[in-house]
Image 1 (cartoon, helix red, strand yellow):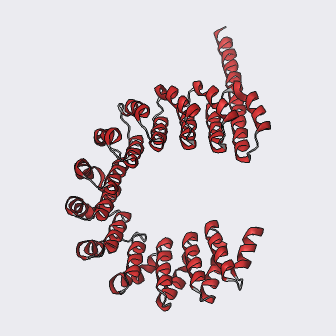
Image 2 (tube, rainbow, N blue to C red):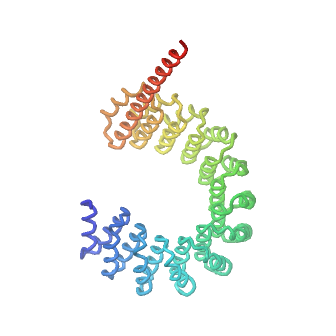
Length: 408
């Protein structure tokens, strides 16, 4: 067990609640099951709300189902609303079907809305479709938007395709944009191709930005070429930069010959840096060689660190040797360590033998440890490429000698 782990476990038993809470959160982030038993002890022994919330969250992140019974017992016995909610959320993260009856009972019989909402969200993570009918009933009969949205989310987490007709109807008829946005997300998760028609039809007339965003993301998830035209229209014409950015992301996920040229054309016209960033990333994923000059220009001239970062990554994705010199220039002089790091990452993909000595020089000058690590990765990749080339050459010589011997 590491010294860090030992220290955290010791702090978990501290008399200072602040130390206990911090230790529990850090143990949850580590995700090491060896902490489960100590977290369970802390959950049982310390009655303060903060410790109980932190230990329950940590147990959920670690995911060890040995904690299921204790979480159920605490839920049933603790009077605090926040604690009860935390126990339910942790049970959902564990995904243990032994919690099904407890969660369903909370959905049907608890009076406090926050507890019912937590139970609805948690039960969708158990992957037990027996609850689907009850979830659909909540969507149909409940007045609380929070409960309806939670039930919709659990239905699509379950992959419940039988809910698709209900989702389509709500997308067209509900006056609540929060509900429309959630069912649009649900259609993207479970609707498949049948969801395209209502999503596209709604996109054309939808005024609410949140709903449009959800629809555009869902069209990207479904990734059918039928969505290309409406997504291009959004990329070109939607007044919201958020939606245009989502459209660029969705177009990244679809294979269609016309997409790259549209993305490249829009890159020059787009005024918002965050959207440019997404367009550049999508051009990289489409491996559009015609975009290299435009991406290099963004790498050299954009004042936005995230745009330059996206450009550096895209050049590695496209993997054209034309990018070697611009990437070396960026690695030498860009003010952002993050951009320099990804310039080195792309150079590790390009494996240009001629850049090895330059990279060694940059390695000696670079001050940022993460950038240095990535430069070394690039040098190693070049060395491996050289070895592979030498091995292939040696094999070729052997083959030639065999052929010569056979011929004579």
